[in-house]
Length: 228
Image (cartoon, rainbow, N blue to C red):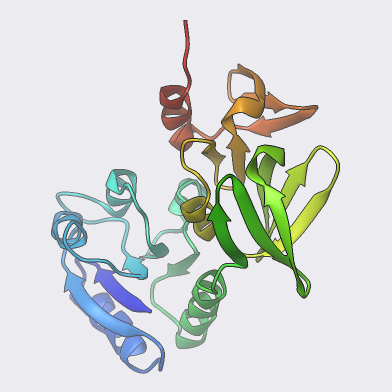
């Protein structure tokens, strides 16, 4: 995995870089001193994993997360635990507290590796998706999907008649599904737009299921709806 380190603290920055260099499957792509440098770098370069400090001048880590349209995996590295709740609204992979412990660093990287596994979605063609369930490929029409929900290292595809459990991540699935048909409403939920019955405050209804809408996805949801 290609990594970017973003931290204004030199000692912390160098420690993370050293841990990356000592980890076999990690590649250090670049190091940035603040969020603005990182934003400029990411506009022209792709990485798989960002080690991101929160408290930085000019643009802090959470502001950087808010600005990214396509987010790589993120491991926050900060001296204060108070940011944990807000950070997980942006689907960070893990949260490291300074000073960094190497064994804890390894554990965070293992989480990133698990999320970086190849998707068990084989293809999406002509309104159909092939999903791998156990050792079989199931042909699932995308019109049958009501919603998709995260379940640890797995996701559930929910239809009106059956639930399919697939080894994958929400990020991989979102990238492969038809973007015009589905919308992300929460870090744990993707819904098919034409299956939404109603929206009230921060909750929407699909079939008889109430699904939460997080504040970080609400604007995109409302922008995607045709309203009168």
